[in-house]
Image (cartoon, rainbow, N blue to C red; front, side, top):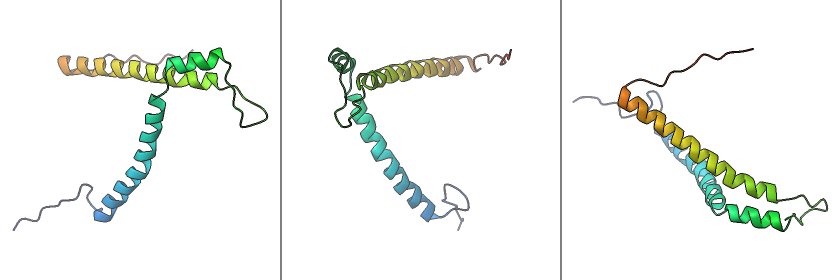
Length: 108
């Protein structure tokens, strides 16, 4: 009978797999909840918070909140643009078989 090595990483047993599974759930579930909450924020929320000059009432300092509400949609937009850029670079590499030209870094 042929001895087949069914381990993903040679030298590591099943306990590493369970450990990685549980750790990924402990990290992935809270991150997914954070993304879910962030996806509910919109540009309209930012403009409304800006128009009423929203502030936090939890501290005596009362810091402004509206810039933070504006960062979330802006970050989502920039991440979307980066995804489009990476997709186009991958499409170029798949069609031509070569990566885009990488220029040397010029230091002044």
